[in-house]
Image (cartoon, rainbow, N blue to C red; front, side):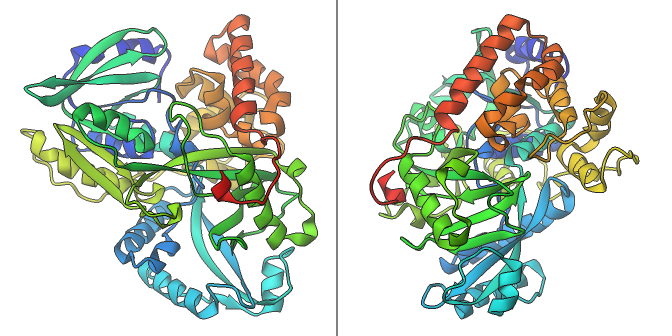
Length: 535
């Protein structure tokens, strides 16, 4: 991973090196492209103007799923590819990508109904090469999904998809890319594209830390900036093509909203799918799907209307639990890069990815978290004609190499060892070796070890406290008030590793708390009917 003083060394030499590809955007799409480029012998650089996974890739719904909903839209190829990639990641990234069972209650008079859903699940199983029982009678289903509403319950269906920590998935992909010879640097903005003979030939970069600007040339410039892609495309004379859609979520304590498996439902107001599932020691509820009309330079945040909309779904599905806004630990909202086709309903827009070549700028956007590897290979196929002398046959290969089992440590459960191996790969042993007394304990209310904080501060390119709390770990979302009560212990572990003096720590802490309160807390309640469209 990133060594001490890596930033100064890397930044100083960028303009002096010859690059085949410069990738703009440090989310899962950019990370995937960097990995495949480096593995195939290309001199590849990735730059991110904020932090790695700052945008959509740390604020997704955390699902690595086959896209069951896309079957209804007739997108069989997208579903098939997603199912195959899900199965690949479950095998290659165990501990990071984990199976997640889903339960869907079948109520009298409510869509989609038993037979329509069962047909979709049969196709789903066929694509995955599996076969399983899906439908359960009311008494069986009530045992599998306790606390749900029972009035009108005819039975229920169960199926399996997968979940992940999206930000950690990005970090793991970047880790493999660096090992393969790629370079990645955060807080390095691409201010403008450079041209030669009317075509894009590089980018002007600005270091957010030092303010230094430098020109970097490359045979191919790839924009993997997701929902932010139109801004860079317009420098290459491209018109707006994206429709930014916001998906917002609520986080609850697991004891307050206890779900052994994901509970999926159709919202009683508009029939959109909403879910509640266990994740990282809490229960996650989402998602909305609304046009995001705010300034794209600012972090997205849930609106009062979206909170009310999701709370209405909870009240409908779990009426006896009496859950209120005061039970919410935190919120988060991400902006999806969706291709604009002009549909009135945002949820009807397609989720396929797109690749556009405009004046030498290759833009890759759209798509799903699950299919990042396929998107990366497609991007490189489009880039190949501009990479003279590069004649490599791109082929499917494991995203992650096998990780040897960690040595037995009585302080770790087998599940914790699996989790560390999945998240940190070959660096998991070094993380354990760096842990000090008491740091292999779990932080209460989460699945996170204190040792992960030390490792992140030491080796994972943390420049700000928000990087540590919101992306290297997810403590800012998992702990009430963003984990403010934990900051003294976190400071004792991380401040020496980061090399920050007391003034720097105080400044970072104040900035983090202000950010959390503005973008991750529960907004003040507003009157009126709960509707995501009101957002």
